[in-house]
Length: 379
Image (cartoon, rainbow, N blue to C red):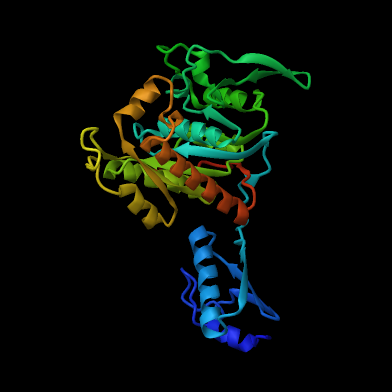
């Protein structure tokens, strides 16, 4: 049986792609239609990379053709994502890539105390459990906590020789390679450095280290939007960033600024999404109850406002804090509600990173030709 292309086009004119006001024929999303005997092949090009939009479009096409053209049609849908045109950015330059590292994810927060390092540690061990090669760079120069969370606070990086050059060998635990300024100070020692000295120390941790082959490097950034953040983005090409927040308004206001930092015209680091930590409290004796101590779905609402993905929520649970203090991240547990929550969160991060890599070119480091921001006064 040979199908008529006009009938197929009329059927596809009844379908609207999510996020677009026109039907998929009128919008130009349908690029080609081919018919072979009992087979119909539709080539579709979408501007939205979200997996659920692709799945919905495919399902709608198959269902509509079977209903309006022929129930016997074997429908194949090929979906291509339209790569957006990136504006020229004079502040982007080719920077140093770290050999062997495929993806670099910055974990940021606008505000301190929202559990950014806890999220970083648990994302890292979950990625390792799944089977990926993972490293963590603790870039929180003035408050390094990653060594404690990985139970390596008393460890020191060893020296190794790579291609005739002496390199730092990252400390490793739970299948994750770790480097931190905390390895070179005592727990009670305050790091009192100006920006240039802190940046130089970070560059040593990045480029004078034998990281080896990594699928993911997670960078635990300090809170806020300051000098360390710029130094990192000037030193290495960040694949994407995630922003951690708690649900209350004061944290969300700072999280909004954190997202804005990455989206500045002279920075342009893709934001993979927002993570809500301490989303709700469930007492051990009342496992079905949820108490929204800091507010309900604040980070989820923020992600909707900013039109960026919501990656998931982690509850306020005492065992997460205890696990971090004891140097054994909660995600290491097997088949617990917490480990499952971190697995779901990690899969969301991986999915958004895959979406980003599918439609955007590799990120380049930035070159600041002048101040990103400054205060001006009138005489």
